[in-house]
Image (tube, rainbow over all chains, first blue to last red; front, side, top):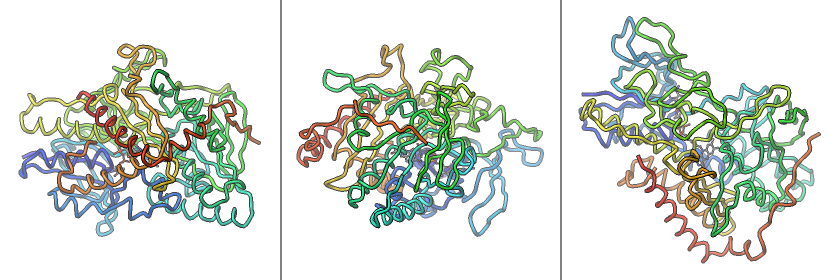
Length: 485
Length: 47
Ligand SMILES: Cc1cc2nc3c(=O)[nH]c(=O)nc-3n(C[C@H](O)[C@H](O)[C@H](O)COP(=O)(O)OP(=O)(O)OC[C@H]3O[C@@H](n4cnc5c(N)ncnc54)[C@H](O)[C@@H]3O)c2cc1C
């Protein structure tokens, strides 16, 4: 009998849990620990944030699914990892703190044979004073945040209808943010709604970003193959900004936010401020606050986790100049550097380096978009880790180790630019591989047949289809496993 | 105060392109093509 504990029930953790349960007999235990009682299809939070979907449409309770599938569920936060056991509990275990109202605050130790850390990001609003729903800006990172944001957006529309001019500032709340795609989507969904409401003329929509140019998306841009042409994602994105009249502030690090004003520095060292009536600014991400201890209870957090709080896995973390980073530096198995029965899946693993060129202002301020880790790779990694564990349980050390390097896999990003069956629009962007590989694909680093961008109604339908498809899959309905990650 | 960037030199879609982006029949064809593209990309990933 083997017991696998999975920390996190997001795209990576939930995918891993369902696959593992499907691949293993009932004698083996699969245990999920997550602080929220509900699963959230995060990409559709964008539509919640403009009042086009309800929280109920993007979330569902996890407990009934896990009960049906025979997965043990603890509504709790993982707080400590003890991979060698401890003086009091000899076997490897994690310490968890319950968030379940019935046991709130209680701490327990859950023993494991295999552990998957799929805890995603900590939304680090604290990095910028005044950032976030507890400060002066809104967020769409969780369904709860998005619904509050929708209310504030509704107020903006009401003011515009009353004839008041409004400035809407959307983007990145810090120089090291990632997830530009989500801010891009929210920008164009807001713009679309303003047009629909007939109030666009009286509003300024401004996108503020740490990207050096539009279309960077934290990955130094892409080159889309289109017939016989190569279209840089910069041209593709600037075209949309031009067409829809959205202005931009580029290469910016927001230093602080006060009510109605964001203060920022740009890469040339100039400092400025931007007034707003409504701001949706994403926080930078870091790893969640978990600690690790050895058998004698010595703190080994720095050996298991990178300074960013993400878990160190089989990547090459050697510090080297940007030009020397390689596709092969990226992890393949996601196994912890220190323990071979511990893995990190999804956003929880520490990336070896930035994909977008990091820049520093003359004042020493780092303006460096972090690498994006979107839903598709998170799910694929979750499944690969589950497969490796199932192999280990069935065949011991001889079991096949599954790999899912982002340098060997593509990703699709369907960035919504407005909702509506006939009026909707989205930008469908695909890249292959995610991590550019100049050795394999030449100077552009990617296969330009598979790296592709297109704007249209069809991409919007695709986004809607993915919403229903992934919720169906996450609910583990019949044949869910036939839907790819 | 901010210096806001606009992108006056960026190409804008022609009237014809804008219509094509909303044409239900054409977009249905694109929808099928996009799905096939995704499936091909997923199959190409080697684990
Ligand atoms: C607004 C927004 C829109 C996005 N849109 C897209 C999109 O269109 N397409 C796309 O591909 N990607 C999109 N993304 C990115 C995508 O959501 C992430 O790539 C994906 O959610 C990462 O999966 P994950 O499992 O690593 O993390 P998450 O999905 O964040 O899951 C982390 C899980 O860990 C849990 N957890 C946290 N701390 C602990 C702890 N201490 N112990 C136990 N559990 C813990 C959380 O509650 C959660 O269940 C978007 C992101 C945002 C914020």
